[in-house]
Image (cartoon, rainbow, N blue to C red; front, side):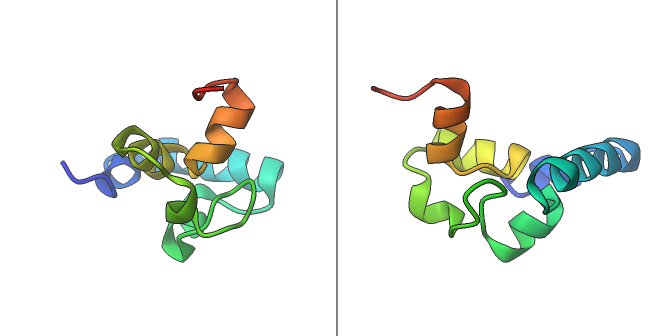
Length: 78
C-alpha cells in the first residue's frame, strides 16, 4: 500500500471524522492539507519537514509534518 493510500483506505465516516476534527482544530482538513502538500499545524510544505520514512507515513495519516508531530507528541531525538 502506498503512503498516500493511508487516508484514502479509511471508511468515508472515518475520513469525515478526521477531516472535521482537523478543520476544527487547525482550520484545514487533513485531506485538503495533503492535496496542498502542507502541514495542518505549521502550514509549511510538509516534505521539507519530514526527515524519515516514518515521518512521511505519519504525514499521510495525520496531516502533520514530522517536525510538528514530534513537537506535539514530545518525540524526536532531543
